[in-house]
Image (cartoon, rainbow, N blue to C red; front, side, top):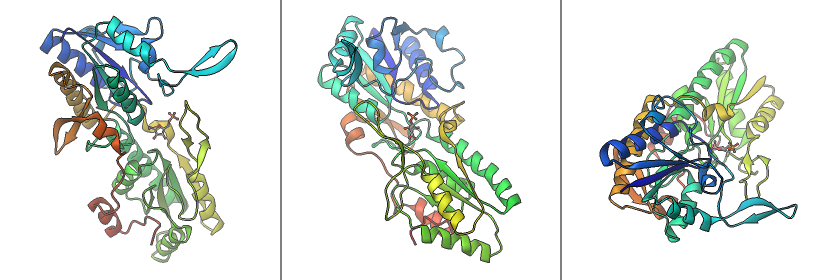
Length: 360
Ligand code: F6P
């Protein structure tokens, strides 16, 4: 193995830089191998100056740094790239340019740090000959075949801190506080932060809720003398007799953007006589320094991805199983997105703690 590439695709997640650092150090120290960084996801193969050489000096101080030094591109799908031709915007397939780029740069492997979309593209590029290796990145924790994606722990930590802060002001004013959290169609962030922060209600996409049940829970708390309540709502949650709420529609380049369910829940509650405020935590969940767990996981993923490349384990993804880093076929990782198991001990525990999911 003489030269490897590394790119960060899709939205950013805390820990991307820690993976890059670990991969560069392992490649250079263990294998004497050169590392090329591809800027802005797959776009770097097409853009001029989209490829940079990464040495030990370039990764110094990266461990605690959020974001990604390589840049990320949410709309960087090489199979559907928007370009202007004859004054008109058209969508073209530039996947062959990626393959040519990998060959031209004489890369023996390409580490792809990404979520579902980026890893799907990586798997398709493998069919065309790209020596790809996946690393599971997303705060949503929704990639199949791995117990945890890096970035998730940091998002949960930030969300939990937000819940703690909402608690004190909610109690002071006898209010209901609704906190809308990210996660797309998976409720992991809301579930974990909701339990860790001791919320009274958790609404997640996997358990459609009824407004009557949520209101009943709030009334029960008042009857017991608790004049405030905290509700964690996953952005993908939806009422039993309703739809998910989007702030923007999708197209062939952008996925639809979830957002607004927190406000909707807040309005319903206020109509029932509870003074309510809504907070949308948004991209604070993605920004900033990774937690020690994410730094630890990202470092192990980055190093393991390079070792996998050296073994020629292409079209595979590093994953966490029972505390150990293993590797699984990319096909398995992208076959079905991971969702909260509604029969898991986590849900049972939350219910046992008196937390309502708005379904009973
Ligand atoms: O997948 C990560 C994520 O942060 C989701 O939780 C959220 O729905 C989405 O990305 C937001 O995307 P964008 O940064 O494009 O607004």
